Length: 223
Image (cartoon, rainbow, N blue to C red; front, side):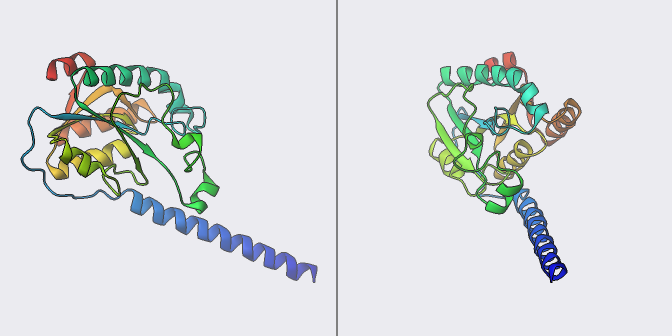
């Protein structure tokens, strides 16, 4: 009798783990997809928007489980805040992007960015200038959000991208923006990945895509 109960418990646990793994695989496949979107038309060539991607409690803040990102956070946020101030001073659109995870099974594995937690909120060290905040659930900031509409309403033709991760959400968003025909600039000191080698690799890939890689000083001269 005891053996039967134990066997049922083990089978239940195995089934639960299998469901978690399958759920995670499906989530990763869907989350990594990049949207095509509609090519932009009739945009103001002088209108730019700053995308501040995933600088939040669950990545760079106290709720983060990613030590390497936390260790880079002070330098990153200092640089990003300079960029925010520069774009705000030039009356350009600022859009903060943050990730929420709503799948309960995924939150069992890692709840650092679960909806309603501090990890899903913007890092409090960020300068919050007047602008928009969008919430995404996939790597691509255009997917399932109002980003297309916001950019269209402001007649945006060029995007300036900062944040993280250069190999994940930043890359997916850049690819989606290129699919739509945006010109893209990136402030190199205001983007990070889990390691410097991964960031360097991503930066070279962005250059090959036609993304302008800038320093903070070069950004000041751009607009």
